[in-house]
Amino acid sequence: MNTTAASESSKGWCIDLHDVSKTYRGKIRALQGITMQVAPGEVFGLLGPNGAGKSTLVKIMMTVIRPTKAEGRILGQPVGSKDALRRVGYLPEHHRFPSYLTGEQALHFYGALSGVGRRDRKRRAGALLERVGMNDWRKTKIASYSKGMMQRVGLAQALMNDPALVVLDEPTDGVDPVGRKEIRDLLAQLRAEGRTVFLNSHLLSEVEMVCNRVAILLQGRVVMQGTIEELTRDSRRFEIEYAGPEIDWLAECEGAKSRATADGARHVISLPGKDAQAAQPIIDRLRANQAVIHRCQMCVESLEDLFIRSVRDPATGRSYLPGAARNGGRS
Image (cartoon, rainbow, N blue to C red; front, side):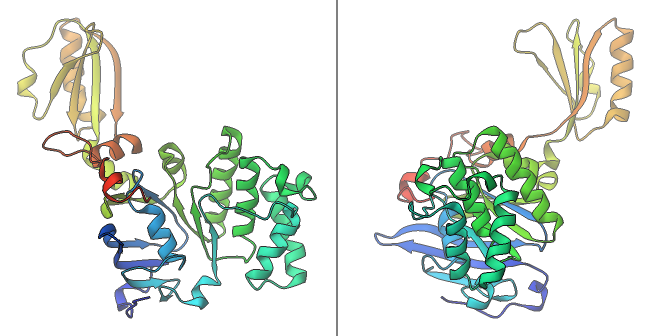
């Protein structure tokens, strides 16, 4: 892999990638100069529509595929360093275990591949199967496992080498709501233990609940990166919903906007960037005009709202999602 020495300013990052590119045969550009940083001890979410290049980026980090170009460091070592990879736990998307093994045997097998000693493998396998809720199935062959059970064992496998960095590619795929809640709790525990988690997921609600920061990929490029609070800051507003005639003095209030509710029965005043204190004069004036206040609250974009906004052309409002076809369907 093409690597360069990290600059002094990058030493604090667990993952510090610069200008990561991948062009497949036929000049299909899956990644176009990705720059991304992940801090130690955080849960970082990688988001994007199908074909955005998410799994391609993960596979480059894990040396599953070769990049056209990749600069930067992972765990302080150049991208592709075997020393760094020994400290990384990895759950691939659509992973498969030998069906003739039991869950316990699978952990021993992959632990051995990671260089974990026999005594440590025995101790960790039992503890990890208990941790992911698979202890009762540890002696059962994987052939009889459901997809959700396979994901749980996959998570345990990713932790067998006691990693500093855990890379998870769609870890909740095929998992029921109870299982997703348990996986979210596990990710929170890993963060509390000081581990870094790099999470590739299309379930935005899951990411919003567990991630410290996120990056959104679109057509092989990073279009947004930061904390959810930072990325949604411009959408913060105070809303007042009331019943009564539409007011004619709203233009006096800087930045204020008014719209009717979907059923047309009420009006909503939106005050971008304002808080409850700034809204009090408007509320007082509405009451003086005999308006009935139904709702007053701070509002901000959800991660889903942010994502949808990021994949639309601001000029036309059209979605960029057809890029999946241009990227050959790779994600």
